[in-house]
Every structure is written in structure tokens, then in C-alpha cells.
Length: 342
Image 1 (cartoon, rainbow, N blue to C red):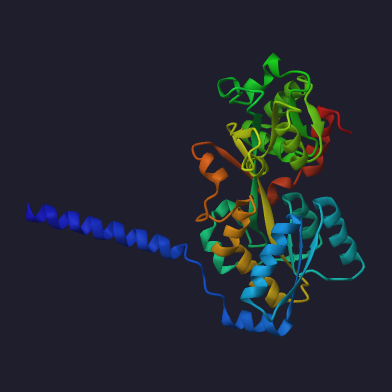
Image 2 (cartoon, one colour):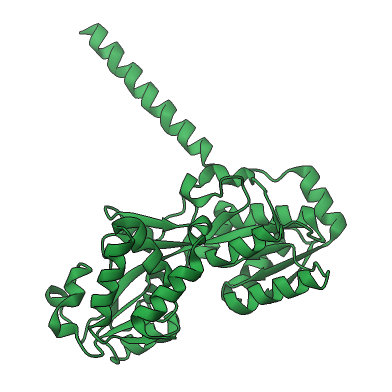
């Protein structure tokens, strides 16, 4: 009996030790004093991003409060205009930005021109391997999960489709579904999950439902909440943001869930290289990722839970990282042909 009690105590101590080590492994890292000193000497940080202006400004305000000697400058644009600006500036020999956060398809052109440099932040220990570039040339800042949005006034819960196949039911034909004309990651993700042939065939059948295809996640969510469409495929975070304001809309995961990674990268010729790394550490820290969550975005850090991540547990997630955009132009062409958006 005594031996059994001793073994039980040992197991409890071992479990407690493992929990402690797990918590320590995810603990927020202290910034390197040399990095702080270097950033303070540079006295400036320039961040170019596709993240919405309000959230980006609040994050920079928090960063300046923590490091008052480092003044910040923000430029925000959509992914196409932002990439064009980066490439045009580089072609002209101008290197104005320190840190870039955008969408995955921006990665290949930047790497081809060697405009970004690997940086393994000490905070990366709190990130799943699927959220980090192989050589540390990018790390996820936040993610976008494609889900099915439902207007709860128009569709009763028991009638809502709960699979991709269910969207092909005749009752969802002719303008009942809203799709994004730029949702190329959906095709990439389903091809990764099912194989390209099956994914293309499925989307052709979905296109035969005559969905309304137009650009813009936020606008389409608003229109669905207003009753323009019963269903839409969009980012979970955007639907959550509108639902929390009391709009009659909710979202359901479709298995598999396509998850788009939005990476953070450091400029190869950053004018303020220490500030670039210090800001990257801050953006990836628990505090920084909690701010991402407060802006109704999906944090990428493992120990910062979001409503989206909690609701997706149990569903297969297809992670679309920057490397998955190698054949991006081919997928864009295919998607445009399927939904006749060219």
C-alpha cells in the first residue's frame, strides 16, 4: 500500500513538473537588452501592413508606450497595392520599411528579390511549426479561417448546410450563396486536402449553383447580415466581429477548414534593423497577440486562444502558408475561369 502511495505521489509530481515546463516553454521572452539599446539608438520603426488601420495604430501605440525612445511610422494598404509599392521602391533603390505584414501570396516575389531576411524571434517557441517558415524568413502574425456564414433570420439552424457537399443542394441555387472573387486560398487548400482534380470539380459544381461572386470579405459579411444573402463563405473573424454587434449572423466550420496564414517579415535592408526585430518580438509576444485577438483577428500564437480557434477544435485544418503559393498564378487563373470573374 505504501509503495502504491509513493508511486502515486511521484506521478503527481511528474505531472506537475511537466505542466510547469510547458508553461515556461510558452512564457513571454524578455527582450534582449542589446536589441533594445540598438533600437533606441535608431529611434524609429517603419511598419508596412495590410492589417486594418485601427488595430495597427493601437499596436504601435502600445509598442511606443513600452519603448518611448522608438517613434513609429505606419503605412497601410491592400495586398496588391502594398506589394506593388514594395517592389517599386526596391526597383528605385529605396528601402524605407523595416517590417512587413501581409498575405501569403506576397512572399514569393519578396524572396525572389531577396527583400526579406530570416529572423527567428525568441517568441517563436510559442508557435506551432506550421506557423513558421522553414528558415525563419517568415512567421505567422495572424490567420484567416474560411468558414460558412449564415443569416440566422433567413436560415434556421437545423436547415443550415454543414458540409461542402450540402452547399450543392438545389435550395441554395441562384444567388443564395456569396463568394469572394479573390478567395484563391480556398482552391489551394481544397486541392491540398482532396487533390486538385476533385477540388476543381467541386468548385465547378458550386459555380453551377450561380452564387454571387464579388470582392471583399467585410462588405459581403455586412450584406449577408442585412439579408442580401442567406449564406456566404468568408473569414470567421469578420463574421464574429459583426455578430458581436448583434447582427443576425453566425458561422459554421466546413470540414476541412482552409486556414490562410498572414506572415510577418523583416526587411533585408531595413533602415532600422534592431527596431525591426524588437517590434517583431513585440508583435509575436503574448501581449501583442492578445491585441490581435482584441481586434477580432485570429492570433497565430499557440497560447493565445480566440473564439475562432476554440470553435474549430475537432475539425481538420488545412494551413496555407506562404510556401503553398508556388503555383499561385495557375490557381488564380483556374479560380477565375471556374467562377467567370476574368
